[in-house]
Length: 449
Image (cartoon, rainbow, N blue to C red; front, top):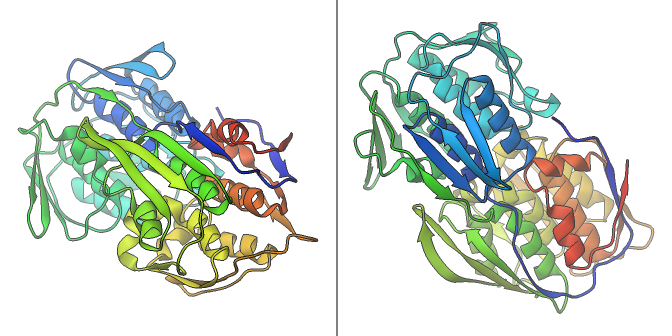
C-alpha cells in the first residue's frame, strides 16, 4: 500500500556532528531473500530485513502466488519455500510491483519458466513509464509471451512457457537482467550459460553459490555462469547488512558538513556496490572501511567518514557506472560543491530510472546557481567551493524518485538553502528511516501533508 503523499520543507543548515549510526538494511538483498527463499526447499529465514515499500510489495506479490511468509518479529521472517515451478496464480491475477524495478525484473524471471502462469503485471506510475524492452526480449527467448505485442512498458499480460528452454546470454551492465536470466534458467531444461564481460552486481550469485548442482561460476578473464535447470535449491538463513546506497547519503552529508565525523556500522561492502566510496576516496575524501568480514558470502564492515573538501573535481569513467548507479544524484551534489569541472561519463542509463536523473539533478543544481552541461552519456558540472544561499530555494516537483529527494535534502542541509521537496513519501521505498536518522544528526525539517 502506497504511503500518503507529503512534502519536506527545510530552512536551516545542519550543525557539525560526531555520531555513530546504523542505516536501513540492504534493499537488494532483502528482495532477493524472499524471491529465492520462495523457490527453495523447506523453510528459509531472513533477519534484519528492510521493511520498506519495495520489500512489502515483494512479500505481497509472493503471497498472491501462494507462498507462505511468516513474520516472527520486526525484520525477521520465515519463507516457506515451494520449490521450482510451484508458484500458482489464478488466471488474470493482477500483480503490482509498486515502485520496484528489482522486484519486477526478478519475479518476471521466475514466473517466465513457471508453468500455467497467465497474469496481469503492472507497477506504480513511475515504474509503468520505464521500458522493459530488454527484459521482455530475453524472457521471450525462454518461451514466455507478453501482451500486447510490441508494448514494452507496464501494464502487460505475462503468459509463461510450458516448455522452458535454456538460453545463452551475454550480460551487459544490468545486474537485474542477469539475475532474471539466472532465476528463469533454474527451472528451464538444459544448461543456461551467461557470459559476463564487465563485472556487475553479484548478490544473486552469492545467495545461490552453495547450490553447486544448480549453479557454477568460473571467474576467469570472462566470468561464466552456468545454470543447470531443474535442480533444487537448499534452504537459506540470511542476516541482511546495512544498505551501502542508503549509507552514501549520510556519507555525503558528513563530507560536506564542516567539522563533522560519522561511523556507519554493519554496512554491506560488496565490491560491486562500493564505487561511490572508491571514487570519493580516489579524490581525497576521508573515508575508511573497518571491521571487514564475510557474512552469507557478502563482505560487511563499518564506514568511518570525516568532513573535508575533495582534493580535485570528480572524474568518473564509464567503468564506474554499474557499481555506482544509485549514488550518482548525490555524487552530482558533491561535485557541485567542489571547485572545478567534474565529469561523469557512461551515465546514459540514468535517464531510465525512476526519473531522468541527469535532467532532474541539473534542474536542482541550476536552482542553486551551478552550471552543468549534459550530452546523452556524459555530464559536466562546474562546481564551486562556496554557494551564496541568500534568495535561493530548491524546489523539487512530484517526481516519484527517492534518490532525487534524498540528494536534494543533503544539498539543502549543507548549504542552508531553503528547500521544498514534494513527493517525499517515495523515500520509504528504499530508506524508511531516512528522516529519523538525519534528525538524530541534528537536521531540522518540517513535514507538510
